[in-house]
Length: 164
Image 1: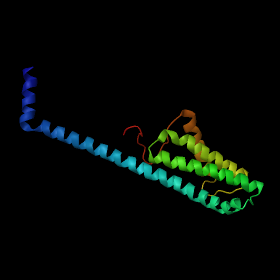
Image 2 (image 1 turned 180 degrees about the horizontal axis):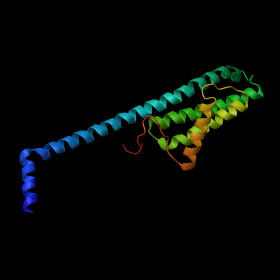
Image 3 (image 1 turned 60 degrees about the vertical axis):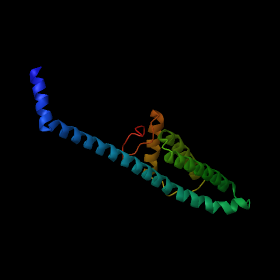
Image 4 (image 1 turned 90 degrees about the vertical axis):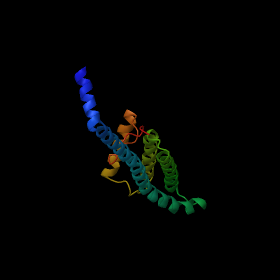
């Protein structure tokens, strides 16, 4: 016991314990700050992804809107218009979930968007933003998230959404 007391007194006199505590506090603070920055970057990247999908959907909707106002839509165009409405609703909900950090709500919303996209293309429309292998990856990724009931995942900034 005397040896332990002696060693503690020696550490305190040499200020090694203080420097150790200061360095631990600085490192932990830096890690927390980096995690906090990554949370903001995660939201920005998710919004950018949704915006790229929304731009084309809005353009397609705007091209069919004048025909719908004049009741001149063919049956095929009516199905496309309804699918674009569903896609626009899903995009709006998707944005809201991102801004409110409700990452658990995003996979079902994304699934609604992908279902609307499939219905739009089955009705004869073309959507070029999410095509080919990117579309297959998005569908498979969403299916895994839905099956395992996981929140939205981000590969660039993989931080837990429940930390803050």
